[in-house]
Image 1 (cartoon, rainbow, N blue to C red):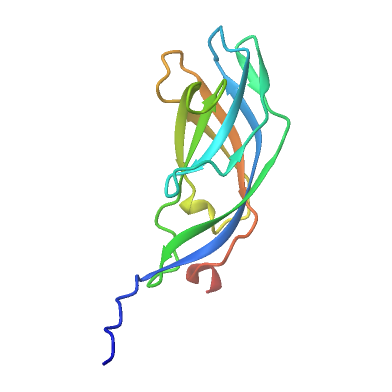
Image 2: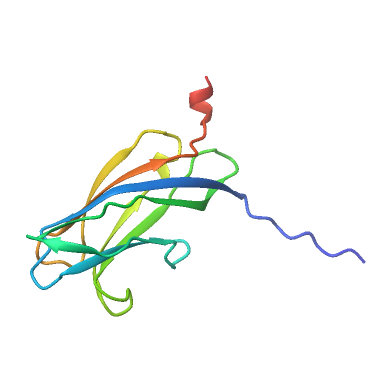
Length: 150
């Protein structure tokens, strides 16, 4: 008569808002005149934010804009720590499907309990020119962990 109760996952989801700013690409090879950056959570696989196109001058590129993005992050209910939250930054010239230049991945799990801006420098994969992307990341909705409450 009664249906079996399904085993629920021991994961909860918290909403975090991140601010991405001061995007810069360095050692961009010749032939790439305008490029943009897409931000893709690895858990979802689809981009959640995209910068405008910026011009490449003398091998470097700078984006003036700031990207604010809210996203859901899974965590174990047994602990309040976020184990892993991987974001992929894709640098492309045209469409992400057809003009992908390079990509880099960063784990933001440690940044969810801090309200400080963190500057990261990411070596871009699939690149033979030593191109790297710099970005400042700030979690705007930080939460306290049990260690912080003590």
